[in-house]
Amino acid sequence: MQNISAQHFKLLATVINTIPFNKMIGLSLQSIKNNSIQMHFKMSPHLIGNYFQEILHGGVISTVLDMAGGTAVIINALQNFSEETIEELSPKLGKYSTINLNINFLRPGKGDFFIAEASVLQSGNKITFSTMNLFNSEEKMIASATGSYFIS
Amino acid sequence: MQNISAQHFKLLATVINTIPFNKMIGLSLQSIKNNSIQMHFKMSPHLIGNYFQEILHGGVISTVLDMAGGTAVIINALQNFSEETIEELSPKLGKYSTINLNINFLRPGKGDFFIAEASVLQSGNKITFSTMNLFNSEEKMIASATGSYFIS
Amino acid sequence: MQNISAQHFKLLATVINTIPFNKMIGLSLQSIKNNSIQMHFKMSPHLIGNYFQEILHGGVISTVLDMAGGTAVIINALQNFSEETIEELSPKLGKYSTINLNINFLRPGKGDFFIAEASVLQSGNKITFSTMNLFNSEEKMIASATGSYFIS
Amino acid sequence: MQNISAQHFKLLATVINTIPFNKMIGLSLQSIKNNSIQMHFKMSPHLIGNYFQEILHGGVISTVLDMAGGTAVIINALQNFSEETIEELSPKLGKYSTINLNINFLRPGKGDFFIAEASVLQSGNKITFSTMNLFNSEEKMIASATGSYFIS
Image (cartoon, rainbow over the protein chains, first blue to last red):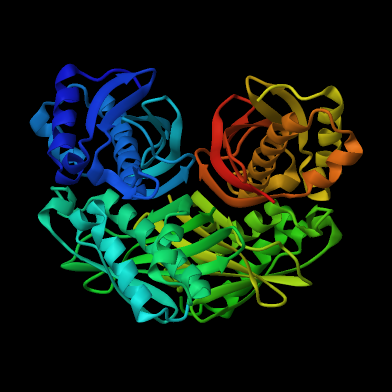
């Protein structure tokens, strides 16, 4: 995954922020480096799923990993449309759908903040595969996932 | 999965409602029948992930299916503790964790409301497996998932 | 899944038998009923993966469930080509590929013989989803899986 | 994953070779490096699943990835038993079972030979997670998988 234009990155970061369910999590696109994208969110009481253990709701982890995988897939595709304007691109961003999401929950979701990292494993004509990991503020891997995505 | 006591059912429904991330989705435990549990939530603008298609955020689907699977696992275990009071039970509910969650996204998440149905496939000493399906208001299956859960 | 023609069933059963890796397992297509396909194989010393427990090799279980899921997908598609001759059909059978296979290992693989049952969950233009279960000779569910398949 | 003793490595390689289903594939443990284990097998006509495309049977891929993941889990555990003799160790090797195996099929299984690489993502008291990739002789990634394993 190479860098996309600053303009496309900004567009995508705005789209991600605008989705209400992402806003509730506080999820934001941070950077593209080492062939991966990085997303960030902070621990917050309303993201806790288990009050006995004070750990993240599994649904928060699943949501973030699905968003990170899908964003990596879109950024991968954007590299093929680098000449297009934002107006031409926007409708294309809506044509990606998740086929399968598989998540392994490695450790309890404890931490001050969390970083999701995603990269594309293989990209074909119709189907793209991505791999995603969630790390906590102590750089421990909390969860690891893979996704397959269909481009219609 | 046989019925648990009305008191235990009410406790569990309250716990599920109290978790903020579930409250944001409007997720509620409805019933236990046909060896399965049923959970319910309504379509709402803040649950949309894709404005071009007006469909549910994948994270909403993942969250609901994980909650439904976990709830089926807990209800399955509660049957073995039918004599215990709520005070004795509460700490035990916090000791379940998801090992793996796998979700197939079968159809776009369109509908007025959604029903998640979950049942236990196999329950061992330490590990319980569940299967979960999400249906829309037209009774179409939107997503199908399996989960494995660890009881510490 | 409705019945396909006897001629198509026989063709498919032969193709499955002819694949050497299936032959080593002794895997055969048995029947189509209750909207599902059924496949069969016998326990045999060369299928054991763990001599301390005398249970099936996990790879045997994975192979059988993938074959059962793919066969359900092909039979589902054959219903749309019911007028075609075997010569016209054969090349189409080679165009199905597995996207994702997810397997939950519920119980140790003990038994005299095993039945794999598979059905289609949802079939779209390009992607078909199936669900598969493996039962032993005592009708215990040994493993449960889902698959997504791409039709090029 | 650090190196285990040469004696333990040899024991494990022999166990893997002795399992008939692995022998049919020609699967052998090759090395431990870069915190991963490497396994090897050659393309052979009896491993083909699709004669139109001349590609590996999906069951061969699943079998190899499950074996590679399980072997990484066992080697990870052996490091904690470095003082034990082979007689003491053998029964312990039989106590590992796969909970969940998830495989993404990235590319058609074409090649002269194949290398499976596996490493442990996280190892807990009872559950260990591993990640596995299959590469062909042109170093293309054919399939990517994750597994969870229970240590009884």
